Image (cartoon, rainbow, N blue to C red; front, side):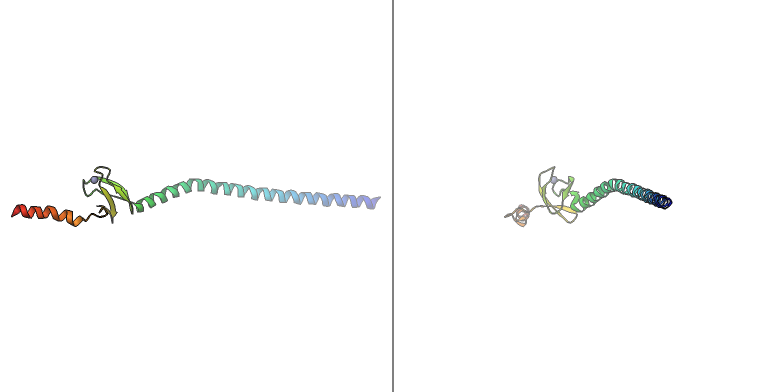
Length: 129
Ligand SMILES: [Zn+2]
């Protein structure tokens, strides 16, 4: 009887020890998990604040690379145009393109600008003579 009782007691004690260690592990896990949850929550919150800033900043940087603010060579109206694209002056409707940091008139296909420039100068010369 005594032997059995001792064994039962030993089992109970070891069981308690097991529960105690389980609780200890649970507490450590909970604290670690809580810390992890808090840190991940902070990281996510920080990212939620930082990502839009980075996105806006990146978009503005990208726009600055893509956009050029200059004056229309025809009417001197200052506006912003996309690089590597053809667009029309919002003021006079002249077809323009970006050349370096300024706008230049589009040479329409089949039209030679030199001829259009030379004709008035020839007229001027003829009028002068
Ligand atoms: Zn214009």
